[in-house]
Length: 224
Image 1 (cartoon, rainbow, N blue to C red):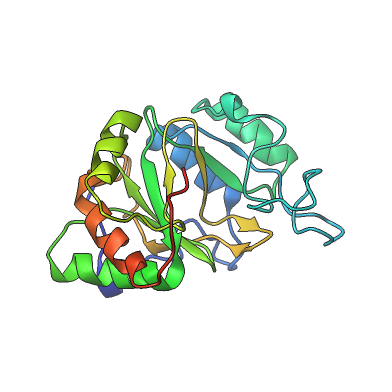
Image 2 (cartoon, rainbow, N blue to C red):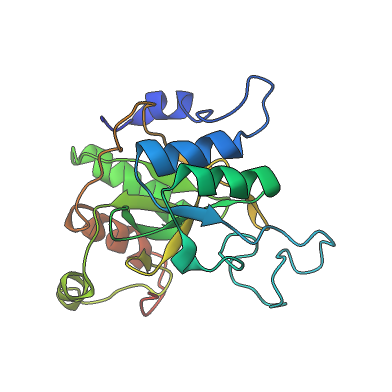
């Protein structure tokens, strides 16, 4: 599976959409789970009353509509029957990826800095895989990493900005074409359709660029 860069990636942003334009969440969830072997589960979805942006009990939810609630994260699966049952019963639920293990991990940062980081990676000739975007943050998918590996990378940095987040083992990430309390989730760099799981880079390949892009904003300590 090849990564998609530049204008080609933008042309592929409508992957997993019906011809009528509405997001085909069930079809996307089945593709992730069965063809790519990425364990997924439904997100909690947005608050139908529009009060907090999230359907969970937390009025100050940090990721409204874009996290697991019931079932919990450990229920994430690649079983097609379970995935079909979930999205048949909850057809508008966001698709949540359980990161790590057999699935990619991710590095996420605010959208303006992420755009700078991707431009720098492109200029350096770094090969990128899929990049997931919400209105506020973009997430670069990377190969699974350990906390020890991540710790060594960050220890070597003089400064790690606080708005940099790592979605590793035990973490999660909403996938396109989900709708959340913070807006729609889309591909900034989309994978090509196909039966094989998309290629993703090592985390080492992207950390320098994302830290450099964020350092210009003057934010502080890391979030995990």
